[in-house]
Image (cartoon, rainbow, N blue to C red; front, side):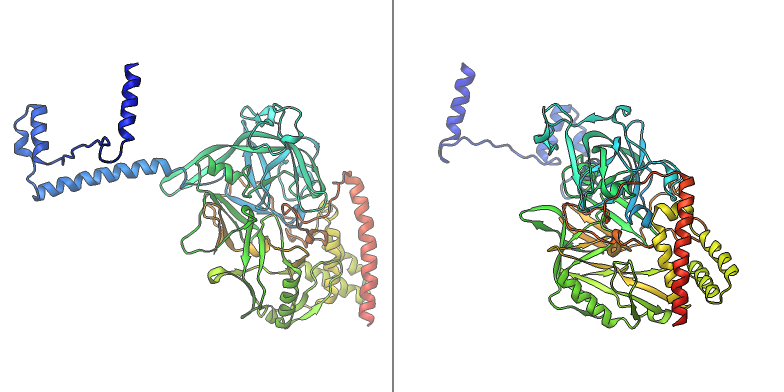
Length: 596
């Protein structure tokens, strides 16, 4: 009771006006003052301390003060280092920072290997800045083929995740704050379901959410490389549809968006990294990904744009589109920066201006290629190729983004074109025996399974037709910019190539700088095999793979299909028939062309 009265009395005093309020004070004593000296002698009982006490404003006095300052600064730096060392480190997947590009076979997306669970299991996931969730095939009801024999670029099977086999996995219940599908739950204790719909028609992944370990490695200027394990949300993808059954991201997708469940968001919230990441795609079909990377000081940047009042996706504002030495008037537009889109799409009106201007500046002959969605293709000499106009995007504050990959040239393999031209030369000369020999030589450039399953047959025919039309020493190239009916454009992988793209979520800006996409470790963990001798690893995209539509997230640009399941014997027979029909038609076509 006495204590309560004392507390009320104290509160009453504090509530009085300034003249009557209680104040508390404390006297400051300098460490080397006479008063401090007297107290030190009194406390220690050692009178000799007075002899060693520094004289005020003497050199010794100043040196002692400076020495103490250095000690305090070192202590402060150590404390700050302990608090921020984890946030200043760069993290990357434990199998390496390298990204991989397989061209047409894996739908022109970029991938990286990641390890999940305890014990760890490896997955080859597509990198998608247009979505949020990390999902992998899991307890499959309907998943893409995972056998390495189905794909020509892999030397090991892809994986299927099983939460029950991982000692570190935990179900994410419907009561979890990251569960967005709570309305579909019968009980708050049930596993949280998810359905990830993508912009490509009928393409989705569905299942339930789990919490498990993502294995990473750290890289820092101030510390040796070390292993890092972080808890992340993973979609146990039991059922995939559309493009995900037909070669696009067969082993899962890593969403890199701004959502709470994305890997960058979870790593930053755990205090492991700065809230930023970078991706880099080089011209050699490789690249790198780093979490926590905020880029070099010399990089250029532009702010992200909110959708309404929220920053839900990586939207930027392009102020003008430049071709060659001039910029188009009134060519500004908003664009989604999306690593999950293989190509770049412009709003219809902007696209119309861009292609007209580009066509005027190109000195090469424009040609039409059947079965090709790219409308602006040209037959160019080596000298004309040097004069293809470049492109730039101008952002606010005159920040310039130089596009380094706005055209696609083919065929990339000169040996293929040479043999194909030899074939038609033989056909025109009616030397059938030599024609067959050359055709057999051509067929060795393509494996049977690759020709059948990766839709190489259409590209094979296109190359044959090109060999009829393209004189020796000439190159066919197409402008790889597409039109979209949406209100905004999409800056895809082809425009990002050759840049270190920094998604600085902490400062809500996109930054970029020219880069060769160096890695920080060796490539000993890369599970790839080279393509067959003489074969291009990245054949031409099909018409379907060049089309996309606007939606919640950019997905592999393809029409939905169901993955086939055929025996090797049947494959060989079907391929034989395809080749016979194709070659018969092509011989007839070239004979008609030659007669003209």
